[in-house]
Image 1 (tube, each protein chain N blue to C red):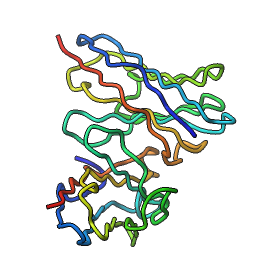
Image 2 (cartoon, rainbow over the protein chains, first blue to last red):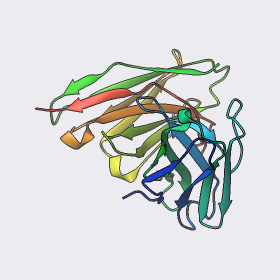
Image 3 (tube, helix red, strand yellow):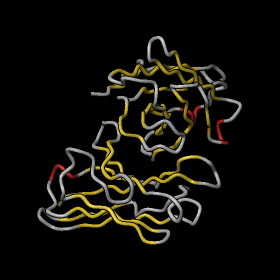
Image 4 (tube, chains in turn purple, yellow):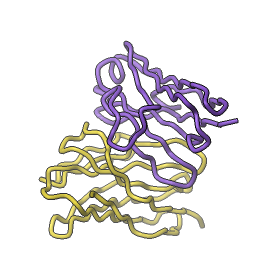
Amino acid sequence: QSVLTQPPSASGTPGQRVTISCSGSNSNIGSNYVYWYQQLPGTAPKLLIYRNNQRPSGVPDRFSGSKSGTSASLAISGLRSEDEADYYCAAWDDSLSNWVFGGGTKLTVL
Amino acid sequence: QVQLVQSGAEVKKPGASVKVSCKASGYTSTSYGIGWVRQAPGQGLEWMGWISAYNGNTNSAQKFQGRVTMTTDTSTGTAYMELRSLRSDDTAVYYCASGGPHSSSWYDYWGQGTLVTVSS
């Protein structure tokens, strides 16, 4: 029962564009930035998007983030097999005074 | 380049304590914080708490308050997370992650993770 809600799975074919949603509330997404992490199988999470839509150095521009109200989304264009991973959204929660995560979305590249 | 290196896997019995270390390198000052995030087998990420490398201030999730202690050794750049009264559902990979100097700062860098298994 994660505070942020993500679909458990998503899929697409190579070259396709996929989006992953993340829903929260006024105390987290509604009032703070959203972050996205990519976790490849058997590895630690890696920062993918920060402050809603910013990419750290080295992250391809195929990855983009957006936020509206209490929801956010991650878009991946030009899907590649190496994008197959778990994706987590995160935000600071002002009511809890801690970080909250989504339950994660497993992306499968068909 | 910032790097976080964690201690090795642990096996503990229920009721015991575990202390995981996280050595940070590549920082030129102590203006950063270390967060602790765990991941139970096949599950998502769960934030446990945070400690400032600058002044040792901490903030922990209510779920873990009273059971977790986070410390830091500025002389070696190592952070520690001790979890007491272990239960089987504490079996997880424990990650340290570093970021800006505030509890609400996001995490740029992650350690490799430490598997803690709680079993009788």
